[in-house]
Each structure stands twice: as structure tokens, then as C-alpha cells.
Image 1 (cartoon, rainbow, N blue to C red):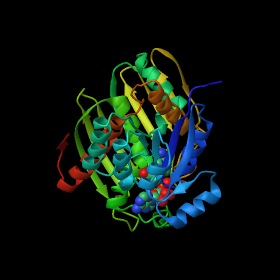
Image 2 (image 1 turned 180 degrees about the vertical axis):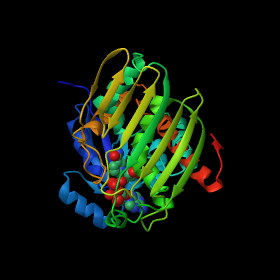
Image 3 (image 1 turned 90 degrees about the vertical axis):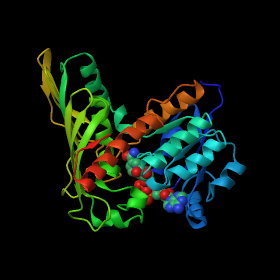
Image 4 (image 1 turned 180 degrees about the horizontal axis):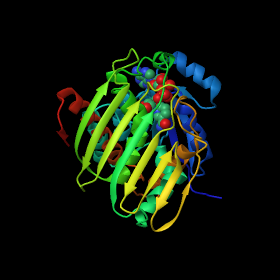
Length: 342
Ligand SMILES: NC(=O)c1ccc[n+]([C@@H]2O[C@H](COP(=O)([O-])OP(=O)(O)OC[C@H]3O[C@@H](n4cnc5c(N)ncnc54)[C@H](O)[C@@H]3O)[C@@H](O)[C@H]2O)c1
């Protein structure tokens, strides 16, 4: 049993993802939820009927009233900056939902505020903590695929119109920063970049082909990496009924295909190989909330440990900026219809 004081969390935003953060923090030994913060008095009162925590509707009152060590930002994507800066100024650590923010300017302001005030900044990318993704990384590190040549990220998901009507920010440029790539595709794009390395240039094309939204519901891109590797990305929310996302990695000695977070094909010239049928648990292919809280919990556990033991979190704000930068480059390349160097 731990006797050290618990890291006190406030969760900012009381929408659909908040539940996973509360459930995770409640199960972490060295952490506790002390308060929540919603966007209106009405929502705060409703939230207090569901959870046993005081729910504020103004972040200044929250910070003035409670002793908080860290906040977990679960507001809509274009609203992560404001609470991050407020918290950093008060010496409060910050972990935010993906994407870090909706533009690089806003993301950089978060990184700068946290660095200037010596607080940690983490960005949720829970797919990095799934066991089969960790196996994929280990296989690459052990040289089982040889030299990595090429990767593909395919996110053929589906969201119906009700999804885009369910919250006013979804699919908007100001609230969501775009749509299919920055909101849904970003998880698999983050994994692709984590495997492949630093991007040199991008050729992208994005379109809105099916939904009545400002952002794209279909995006495609060709990526060249500084280490000579190449990759393609194709992400959508218009592909009915929605298929499990795929990450494909090809090397000189083998390949691995991850589908819905599970390895469905692993072939190496250096080791006995497997091909499995995935049962696709935990993918948001057609239902945004069919995701387990388990991997949020593992990432939040690491964030708590980074506060207690004074180290950078496994996924920092700077790490969270990388997939955002590539997605912004895809948008810009599509707009200018030219290859864009990062
Ligand atoms: N990691 C994942 O797999 C995952 C899954 C879903 C959502 N998310 C991310 O979580 C964030 C929230 O998504 P959601 O699906 O819970 O959205 P939601 O629409 O269900 O909730 C949005 C939240 O923003 C708050 N809000 C609205 N207007 C506000 C304002 N003006 N000021 C402050 N707060 C305001 C609302 O009260 C609500 O709490 C997004 O950034 C999204 O990308 C991540």
C-alpha cells in the first residue's frame, strides 16, 4: 500500500471522453479526482448528479477553490489551450486529450506555457499502450523486419450525420481543426510516425465527399521521411459501415499488419511467423465510444509517475505536436496542391 500523498486531478470538460478519465484516475493508486469543470451552470448541476465530485463551470473559481496538482483536459479540441495556460500559470501539470490543439500556433502556445512555468505537458494517445503495438515496436527494435522501407495507415471509419450534429464543434475548423484526419485518423497517424521517424515532406489531398461539414471526411497523403522511408495515409469518416484501422509496416526482412489494434499478420524471414484473425476489440471504427478505458489508464498512470518522479511523460506535448504538424501539412499541401516540406 502506498502512503505517499495522491496526485489531485481536476477534469476539465464533461463530455463523452470524460468518463474514461474519471474511471482511469479513480483506479490509479497514487491519484484521485477532486473536482470537475463544465462549460455551463446547467451542465455542472447535471454532472454533479452523475459523479461524486464538485463540478465548477468556471476554471478560475475551480483553481481558487480547490488544491489541484494536475488537470486532464477533455473539452473540445479547439478549447485545450485556454485551460492549459491557466493551469500552467498556477504551477499545475497538464495532460490533454488528442489532438494537442487545432493549430500549430495554439499547440506551441501550450508547450511554451508549460515549459515556462516548469509544469509537465502530456497528450493522450492511448493506442501506443496497446500490447500488440508494443509487440510491433519490439519486433522492429529486435531487427525482425530488417530495415524499415514503407508504412501505410488506413483509417476507413464511418460516422453518421447524428455524430456531427451531437456537438456543435464536431467537423468545424474552429472546434475540431478539420475532421477525419485530425480527429479520428490522428491515432493511427501517430503510430505511423512513431514507427517511421521524422517526416521530410508531404503531398496531401483532402475532400469533403459525404457529410455536410466544414472539415474533410476523406484525406489521402504520401509521406517521405528524412531517413529515406516512405508511407501513405488514407483516412475517412465516410466509409460505411466503418472498418478497423490498419497500420502496415514493411521491411527488408518482413512485415507486420496491425488491425483494430491487434497484429493480424506478422512475417519475418528471421523467425517463425503468424497470421491471426483479429476480433477487433476496442476500435472506434463505427462507434466513437466503443473504446476501453484501460489504455487511458496506463497512459495516465505514466503521467502520475512522471509528476511524482520528475521525468517527462512517455507522450509529452512535443510528441503530441508531431502528428498535428503532419496533418496540418497535409491540409496545407491539399490547399496549395503541391508537395510541402516540413
Ligand atoms: N482519445 C480518444 O480516443 C478520444 C475519443 C473521443 C474524444 N477525444 C477527444 O476528447 C475531446 C472531447 O471530445 P468529446 O467527444 O468528449 O466531446 P463532447 O462534445 O462530448 O464534449 C465536449 C466538452 O467540451 C465542453 N465545452 C463545450 N464548450 C465549451 C466552452 N466554451 N468552454 C469550455 N468547455 C466547453 C463541453 O462541456 C464538453 O464537456 C476532444 O478533443 C476529442 O478529440 C479523444
